[in-house]
Image 1 (tube, rainbow, N blue to C red):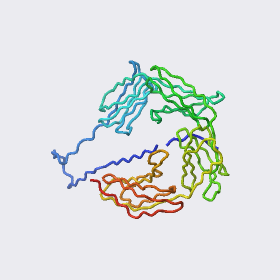
Image 2: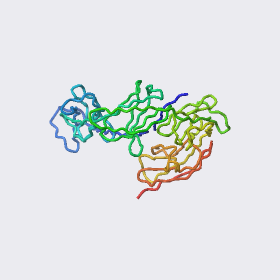
Image 3: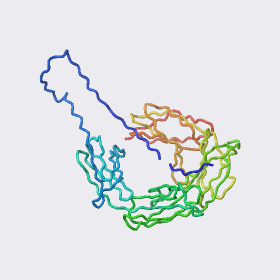
Image 4: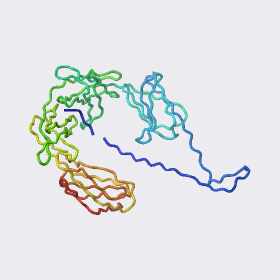
Length: 382
């Protein structure tokens, strides 16, 4: 059975570009004569594109292989890598205010606002420490494709690397201090610990020796109890792996710790199933999939809006927060909403549009049934 690690990010960017044409009419051609253009008809010249020369150094010495980029907001508009002389040219830039970003694993990341124009910018990078992690299995053999994480105070991932064939990977740009680190594979028990980055300009080595993890096994079946071969089963926890059910619907998740985990199952033609708090070591777990639910509604906005966000959400007691099982953007003038592939249960249909109040409508979804909500109206915000 195929195993791996999973991770969740979806970013939706919508960029509009307006083009203006100037149309003019004239009579038959005449001999050229001096013409004085009025301010109303005179067009401003297009600003010339420029190249930005960047020199990256540390302690006065050039830094090769530094990644250099300039961004407008969150969007990178140009990138490059420094050569052995520490220089890179970012070409075809429009003059203006941009954000300069310089990164190198052996140095502290550098960001600042700049005014782009002709000329050269020098960036002085401060030395940083880096973590060189080695991951071994219970027999002391190197583990390839293992994930090593640096975790923040809340347990969220700050940085990650994946081990090579020698079981080694590196995470750079680190300031001195104590780091919370974790290694996992989806086949072994996750191992967590702390590492002290003592000095800038040198590597801190840390070895993770993993142990065999616990397992959780069972079957994926449909609403009649028949096997669902090929279903994807996995743990939605950060260190969880995934597997594929065999022809009899059987699955086994390995590399688990002792704490309860959250397990999902999904297959074509069925709604996804999520089960909370299953304890590793359990066998004969049954994950029963249902035919998907759907809903439809007609939405009326009180005023014009660029887009409408539509979400299907419910309060999850396990995570103590609202979890959305579907979320998408609908662009006006589209008003008819149809959402399919939903799990059964009680949810809120949440409608959000700029300049309007957020509207929530409670809906009960049943397997293989479509809930028809009729016309829903968003009120204008004051």
